[in-house]
Length: 390
Image (cartoon, rainbow, N blue to C red):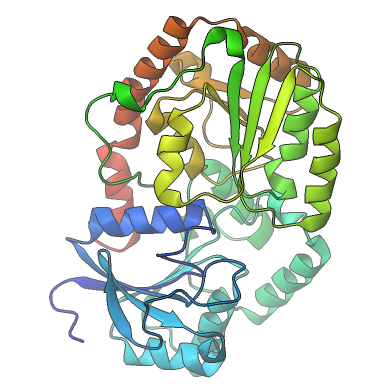
């Protein structure tokens, strides 16, 4: 394939379309491709199945390039995900940029081992850890990760790469863990869904009747760093009538059992439902059906799911462990220190007191304001600069 006049970005990511279980990382890469496909040629290498699945996607071709959305995609079955298989793809795919998504994913490790062992240092190599160095994520299986990080640094596996960070918070985490200089890091805002509606669509808004209770949603991977257990402990203290719906894959069986135990301890005024996995294409619509997104996460590099929620007009109640700060000043929601559990309780109680009209107005105001933040031209420009186009 001829790269033509466009810079070719050979992108490795663990899971891509038509998958959806990998969450925000997948969505941000899709959004990046959609926004920049007119300027760059994206070639995406990914696994032939969704996160956690035993079977491949139906109706795909393995071990060959095919058009998926705005990118050319190459699906690898397990037997092809070898160091040699990765090497052959890198060597035989003309490209100017090698874009590796995740620090710990085997795709990244094998690609960098090839570069190190075969002296393939002529191309721009970008590594995006996507929040993996945040403490909430890093402390999961910490010893194993610590040993790998030390070995990688000793071997120089990540030497001479450009690090992609979603925010200054993630940049600080990368510097702390990898002991590198700030000039090796490029802060790049995460791009939103390409086709956000220009106008507020009232038909998608389904506020709960005030007398039926506050409808709260938790939508994320159910893993310890996302803090569903904390949300449940907060709701144990709430006295208002609340309907709490949980969406997302239960990745850690032990942790999920802990959460289920907490669910059984909720008071009678709190009704909880687990509604399973959700297709990425339905996320914004699902958010529009709730009064509040409660997401006291232990840490996010960016928090794409927060952006999706605000796009729907639904206010968010999150921790201060994300780049989404001072939300109350813009009337987008609240970011609260996890040490202040009673503050979370108070906000939920106050939300429950709002009338239907007040909730509807809040939604409309959020949707109007979030457009300017998400569609900031500066975010698009930082992504262009990441890939070497100024």
